[in-house]
Image 1: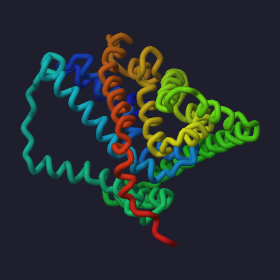
Image 2: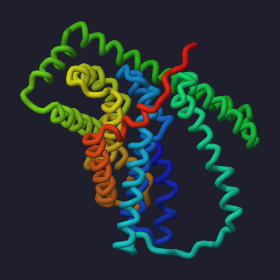
Image 3: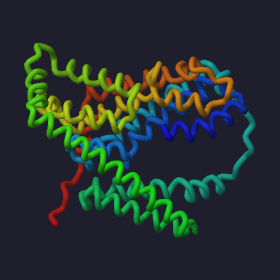
Image 4: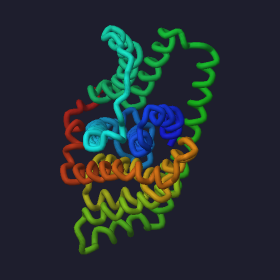
Amino acid sequence: MVSVAMLGGTLVPEMESRGYKKPMSLGPILGSGGLAMMIPPSGLAVLLGAIGEISIGKILIAIIIPGLLMAVLYASYIIIRSMLQPSVAPAYDVSPVPLSHKLLNTARYILPVGFIIFLVVGVIFAGVATPTEAAATGALGTIILAAFYGRLKWQMAKKALVGTLQISVMILMILTASKIFSQILSFSGVAMGLAEFAAGLPILPILILIGMQVVLLILGMFMDIASIMMVTLPIFMPVVMVLEFNPVWFAVIYLLNMEMATTTPPLGLSLYTMKSVAPADTTMGDVYKAAVPFLICDLVAIALIMAFPQIALWLVTLMRPMLAR
């Protein structure tokens, strides 16, 4: 939702001033805003791994290809829609920019971001660092880049430290509450009872997985993602283990559903966030219509990953095990 608020408030007015129709000015931002959680290093992926007791490193690696798949689906829709209906994204005059300037801007603004992602994800994939160590490496790399660009000021460092402390406390409180809830379910026998009940149902396990996703979509319309994880993962994970689903594969599907839930009409939270930052003439109907094609892309991605688990698990199988310490 933060990404939708930030991008929607800055890009939508600019796109509409250039003649873009609302389906093409609102929709891509709604889609790409949720896509952020599928790009490592994803904070929600880390939280999911911590609450669900799933390997955080494997989740961060597993979401790479699904994230790219979603980006390709979104881009394909935008290109095809623009070709079939040019009026939604009309051509406009662009000031020519020399290739040297493009390369310079890429090196200045894009490569540093890729460098940070590599520091975090690359060292995990190579098996030379744990997720905690990789996070520290990423933080160090960010500090070095900030110093290189002359942005490492005391006020910025203070703001970053305070923000880190606030987020860390919030996450620890969520993990504490989730662990208490999980222990209550475990000691009361509810978790195991639900798992045994699910295992005994005379239906295909994949249908139970679909039922879980329906629950996530409904909850996603009313609750924030961290709260949904805290409530559902202690219940879902015993069922996942009894049904012998790969927990990393399930984590990827879970994140995809969380991304989708926030933009699902009529009550997806990102939809109302977009409405609040969009131009005044934007109606909720405009926001709904813009979101639907990207929800269809999400459904296609989920269906492909359910049908072909290796989309999510292939990179995980290539990971080097942690080196002995």
